[in-house]
Image (cartoon, rainbow, N blue to C red; front, side, top):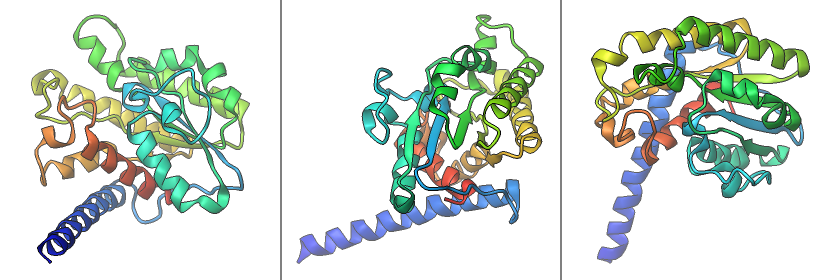
Length: 254
């Protein structure tokens, strides 16, 4: 009896935790996008592609090109999001891929765009990029600016729309958690905020779904400290990955 009672108690707490993440995600999306935010629409057999840096990559096996499996999707938010899509959109039978590569900045996405994006002919393309475009300037290994970031990403999106006119774009807000081990607040802020502003502006220009990750994490740290969501403040741990999936699903309406 005690075992059953303990199980039910744990299940109740787990359910409350999931509800909490859903509420955080919903509040962030509503605050940033409003009630009339753009949503995705899926046809039958849609191809959904996640692109970005290490947050998207997250240990995927780069030689794998088989959709809908952990080798190809990695262990990050792309996997967590994909499992939700595959569950909720089973009647559409989506094919989901991850082609994120650790360390990438926008210009590096462009260098591999034909092979790692256009060749998949995605119906939905989700991009999370920007943290390295700023972070790497702090070490002196990269001389980019927010103006370079915005120009490079605008050109990449324009090129993508020219090649795939019917593509649905999802632009994800780059984020950093104050209190993470890699985040020096004086070095990061407010400069990094400008990259987020540029990303949201481009989402409007290209009629893309905007996914407010920073806003969600800003709310999440009111519930638990930054290190609970992401030890270094850049790469999410399991709770942070689940939160990202919740935000992505809420923002896109899937």
